[in-house]
Image (cartoon, rainbow, N blue to C red):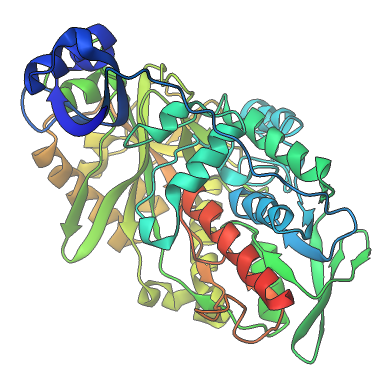
Length: 518
């Protein structure tokens, strides 16, 4: 017999199968000798009270043996000679769109401006060590997209958009730990995600799909408002009448191309701010209400939202036990982001702390039409580059100093490898953003006592939170509202925010595209 129920236990019991079995036996009056196995289905941490508890959903096998499920990938057919779909971008939206095409018997031709996941690494070293930004190969561009070397978080609130568990199971099938099916906030880790991405690519190619790296799309062939093909930077023309556009939130040249070809796009609100680094020990003390974190608890994350005079300020992409990385995509700009390895074992934690932006905030750039937000974003990244010394160093300020409008006399070493320049954030941001940050951090400290400390350092800017542009599409067909055969997809088009939601949107766009071909 099998029984499912929820139980709350201590971290130690949750980590020890024998203790958990004993607890289940006592709580449910089941003789312990009859319990063959206790399977954890879902796991989350409840740190709201002084004593931290673990919430578990479990399946108990009573007088019945447990057989571990082996997750199998779909039986992908050979699509070498099948009808073709072009997919621009090999991030999670593009790769999962390609997988879905193969699964449904169509041939994906994936065009990726960046390098394969292994080759990207030398360009990441170059930006960290030598301050050299490779425009097509960096933390944002290349196989796997921005998520590959930016933490690998798999948590999403977009469950209404599609089957989250299906995407998680596919990832397990391609080599991810099955614990991502259990944890409330699943995470793969930057060190493990590249191998999974490579396995997805190999599966696509094995079954007849194509992936073209270091190939940039520079134009679309359009006749009578219908896609007829794409043109690459090598002046190669790929003749297709179905294109899934999954270029990510930083493909500014694609946004410019659409705008200049008078293909309808629109400005979209986003958020922008700083990336703040604390010691992980301090965050653990605040969140777990302890002096020393229990060995049975993971490094603690945090999530916080405040309103400052009617404008939202919140934590974004929080990385426990992680580091801050340089994520510029062009020379002459600086951008920060964060990531964690799978063990989250670095001594520091960081989070984007960002301010809600509205369309009216971009008035100064209104001459750029729907690209106004993009140019607003770009102006702050370029100003930061100049202020910090025109390298990949970033403007930085101790957190208490920021709230007092005081330039930090010195800065501690942080995990951001290219280095820091002591700058008052009032020089980096428009007044409304700076004032929101000043007051918001004080409000943060009222909720998380100890958060506002001069041992914490703000790095600027955290600016690539989401796309500043939306590419409109029909709600039912997912086709662009103007151009037949063009399917705006994923985070860059304004329809996703993270690995899982982008992957879900990639599958949906592939299904919609293929439905129109059948």
